[in-house]
Length: 146
Image (cartoon, rainbow, N blue to C red; front, side):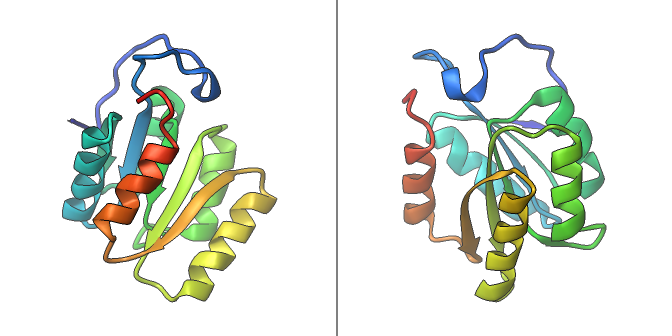
């Protein structure tokens, strides 16, 4: 599992992954342990995963590493949900988005609606703490190359 590193690569688009090609997941949370946990679960579900606790790194990682799935907190000190959605659309993020937050359900739903209105593909919005079993099932459904 890599943290905040770039690796040059050539790969097919997310919706055209060939059998045996690992999809990429980027986990973003200001709590490094939470981001790392998401990345570890993703690896066990067959993803190539990276994580960061630096919200200022999101745009660079999305542009350079091109994750297929981005799992992110929506309430971080340097980047709230509205700013995050702007960063992702500006960076051309074309993958699936999963919001994970301890905020009330209404806030997660509003973030999901805004992201969808801005053209992003929201796969789910989940409450912290994560239910690991449900999260694994979600990742498995989003990773048909397994």
